[in-house]
Image (cartoon, rainbow, N blue to C red; front, side, top):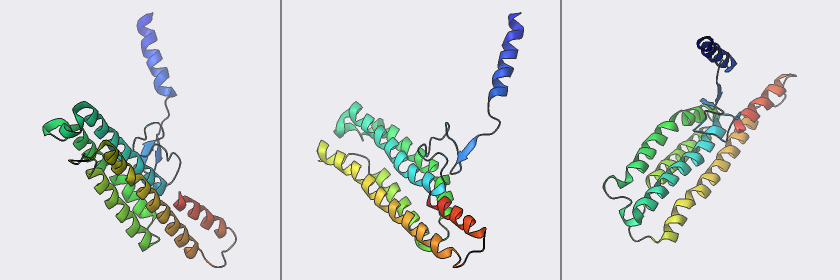
Length: 192
């Protein structure tokens, strides 16, 4: 009797699973969304902005673990930095799709697209500079690796403003009935 129960139980579990995964900013989610976990149900810009903060935090935490394991002076010696180097490579790959989706969403404005590219460069540079620098005190290091959050936040706010302004300018002056709702939905979608 037991051999029959096992296949039936497995079949019941498989049929209970959802048939298709929801996507968020081009990533599977929400329970599988590693790249932008705080942007569930939001648009590609929100996913990318969340990824900038989240993936930086992930590698910052990995670097903190290396520092705890080996101390500041030895945290970059030999293979001691292997975990953070892997994190950097992995997160550069992970942010690629959300970045492309965000560029597409911001295509309404050349200024927004350029600002996104600038944010991406800033993020990459911040990720590459997570390592401790010789002579830095604990307080100096922690202050330096915390600073990018403020810079990211400022750039993100600017980009959101640019996109919102571009969406308003792109809306027709006297929208036809029904079209006005579509414009409002597009503005809301792009501002997320």
